[in-house]
Length: 243
Image 1 (cartoon, rainbow, N blue to C red):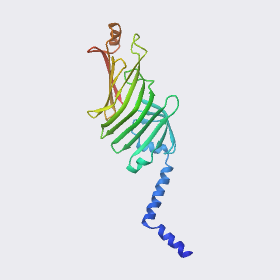
Image 2: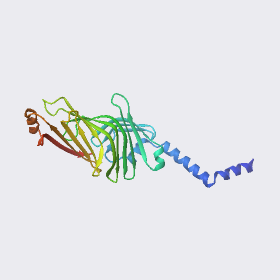
Image 3: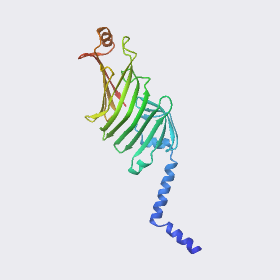
Image 4: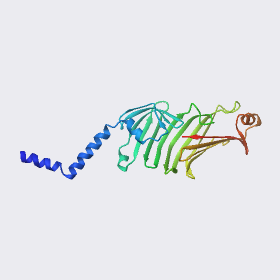
């Protein structure tokens, strides 16, 4: 019996045995890793939260905010398979009356958002525009080395009425694409008279330009007095900021 025990012990100390033991130790340590630490190590500087609770595999982030975008409280967890490729990938989600879902991943200078769906309310607007909400439809964006490398899906905006004689809200949407190293989303309203171009650089600097066409003087006049400028066939206003 003693000889057999020594034989088993010697087998456990082989190179493959040590590798297995090391692997199990790493898995054990990762399973105990708090979500707060994982987010702190991988999230960009513009990501803030009121609270982060739970493990790296299943936790909750309270009042998550990315730059000027308040995403609210979301469930979050690290996806295990991308770790084998050296990439940290988190699934974010929220159920209820305002569902939201996204997958965020990073590997070196490669940052990716995929499967972004849902609506995000913007109570403070967006720059100088009275944006009340953003909507996402299967949006995917990949930034590599500070430039837009791939983009698809849709982005939409709802704006409060900028003038008393206009409808209560203006809804626009468009397809995302990469252009000149930036993420560009040209949006249009259902009537084609409202157009907005959103441009986001790899640095996080964004610009938005809204143009309203075909307005009668009794509507365009007050808009120009309120900060719009005359454009060919209409009036427009631009704003910018930093994510």
